[in-house]
Amino acid sequence: MTWRWITKSALLLLHGESVAEHGGADGLRDEGLLDSALSRPLNLVAYADPAAPPDFAALAASYTVGLAKNLYAQVNYNAEVGRSNSTVQSVNAGLRFEF
Image 1: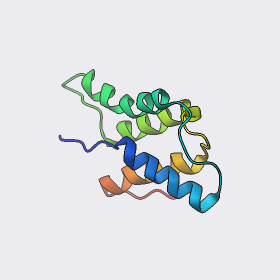
Image 2: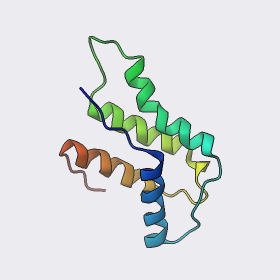
Image 3: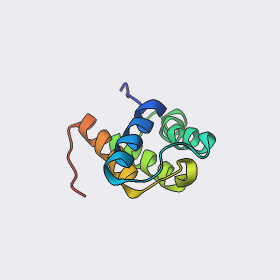
């Protein structure tokens, strides 16, 4: 399967929209933490057993956990970013979750 990964620019755009809608400060505090969070699902695929590759849910969860663990990467991280990230992944897979 060919995956489409979330880019840093797309995530920053989502964060900017969240800040515009809900208030707060925009920007990055630690770019390395954000890069680390975005690389989690890529590493999951790279080191997975070829006989049992990760599915969509595992990759979406990996993004969300990475962002939650590295929540200080952005100046004003809030739960909306995590929800937005999960929603983007769900839309790409044709799934819909309500939060």
